[in-house]
Image (cartoon, rainbow, N blue to C red; front, top):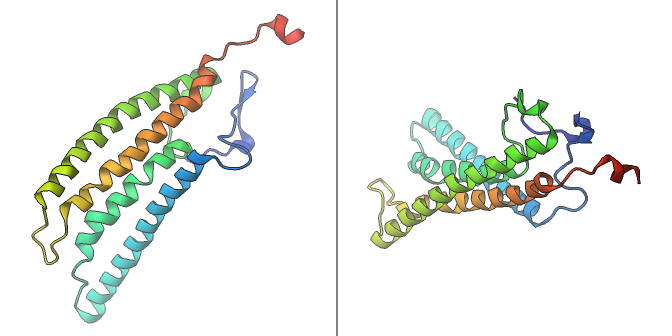
Length: 194
């Protein structure tokens, strides 16, 4: 299994080294990936701070912070997850089992990555659509939770279509990133010798 790909020691397969995602200045997609990662990071930091404060208040003063559990489970945890996974796909930082795929030719690796992007586009497209409908219905019904604080349900549910919308975008971007490598034709030995 691999996590983040370090391109400095990239393996050479069939005479071609795996190319880094971008060189030089980051493009718009890289900037969007950084932005969504920042939202996820802020959610993680807020989650850690609130849970720590809740535990300290519970054990030191015997009074937990009343809203922490609901806020963490309804807003921060979904934001942490749904805003983080699209950028992870784009930067190829997700866990991957490369025991088999690492031995394949680069072009076939790109074809598999393109196929994975198509599957992701389908799955996350359906999730984005269904969750957007759920959010709209919740907003129209003005749903709230029956807890100490009447949290609006639609605000929590809205995190899902927004986050999966970013995932759909990153799947499309990954598809078009891989497409040229899949479509390119190999140069014949006669063309190379010229």
